[in-house]
Length: 203
Image (cartoon, rainbow, N blue to C red):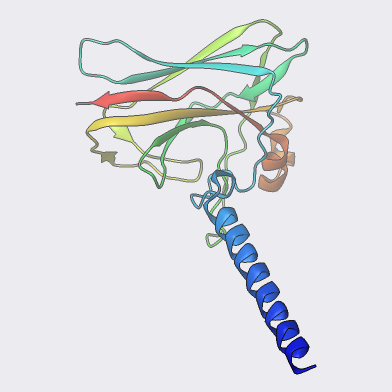
């Protein structure tokens, strides 16, 4: 009887130890998963894996030392889609791993900041089969997001990975309608499409 109780106790302890280690492993995987990145750029957005946008990113050759990052958007669907038409976009954001994100969209706001005035951008249509292009000069490098003010240039050197994400929606945002939108509704409107990453050599 004593031995049975002892073996029963050891079995319970072993099971507790097993489940404890399993929970720790799951928690560790959640914390380091790319879907839960600590940079918070897309914490309020959802990325559509079946995006109607095909994005081609590349660096245009120059002879004057500029680093011009270009991205072309092609509507591969049979319906009009809409992307932001703002002279402030795209934004360039430095991520925690040192890579750069070119963002043609609205990033998540800082929850600790009370924003008085936030731009609600209008949109332009991308018709089925059509392609539109955008570009941004990365040298000098100006880091800014949707809520930032005029930045100071940031000095970087060497090879840096640059990725691109573009927000899109199924309905237009017209100039006479944007005053009706709030920031939460704007974030809900946009979906995200992601282009290919490019290794960029900075002088």
